[in-house]
Length: 126
Image (cartoon, rainbow, N blue to C red; front, side):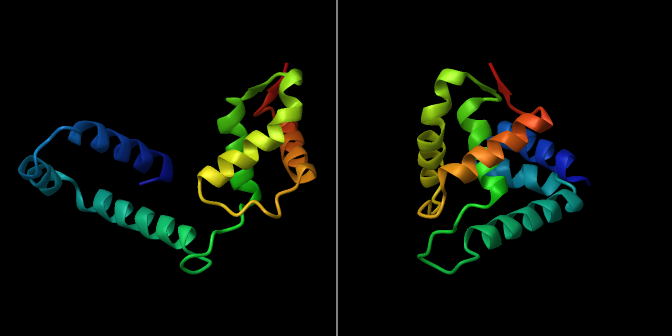
């Protein structure tokens, strides 16, 4: 299965399981194909490895991809020129909410990543 279809399957399973009893969930998991369950396990291992790659108790520094995702979450893909001054603080706050150590995240780095997203057409400045 590809990554996109696996994520869609995970969302579908999650939506179908909300509000179900434990017995109903066990019965449902018995009917899930083995390759989907293996994809879920692989995804969870990757997620846990990424979350705790720096050791227990330490917070990770955000990668450029993490910062780009935070920009997308804060702006929703559209950024008003009036919102540019607050963008750095909002992105930094969002990253801290996700558990990242933002002590070395500078405003220039956020602006550089924002510029690359604008050039790619992912974010529009209005």
